[in-house]
Image (cartoon, rainbow, N blue to C red; front, side, top):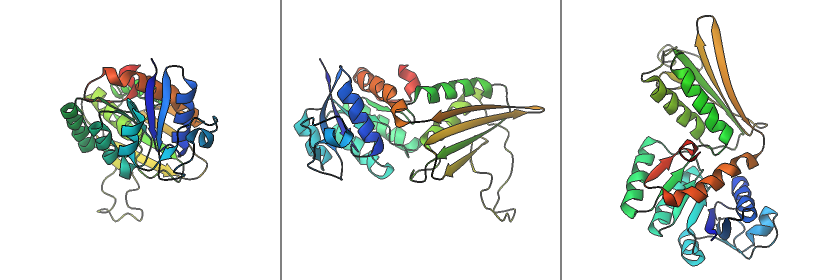
Length: 268
């Protein structure tokens, strides 16, 4: 039996990729699409997979009820995702979320809401399998290197900074190390620096730098250092289709989970 899937943020670049992936997978069925743009049009035609008989709706709660969706994939905006998850849980539909911009307090609240509703939630800061492996390799390095920095590069339209992947990577490195990394550089503002925050944001002693310029899609580099040597681990996203195997894994796994599951590594 196919899993019935609704896509929230369906008209966006990631949303359209999800629509194509769901339509082309034998174990999933596209039953709903929500977006504030192109309401009333067939999402299959917008995504380039031909008419699917699924019209874009403007109201998430109504679409969830009318579609009979079991799982809702959300690639909307950081401003909308918290409310979208609440609406999905109220409808008894399991959210699979790739929208970034959530912080630790948001994740704790979502986990509590998920358990109260008895509806599992899956959130991944990055659905690319290579990105998950990057974090896993970096976690091993964190055990022996005292210095670490993260540089993440995205297109100029990405709203949040740092990226969800950088935030998650810093968490993973800190957990693997068991203590903060050696912090380099002080308070730029206090020292009278001409470029405030030139050392980036700090998390667990790790400096995180966010680049936002045209020409990039999604890229991240983790740099480790010790006297006499450095080690760089880098992941590059070439096209958005690289996220789809991970999204489909989550769609098929989420209903068998409980509470909030954060990170693709838990279902690989």
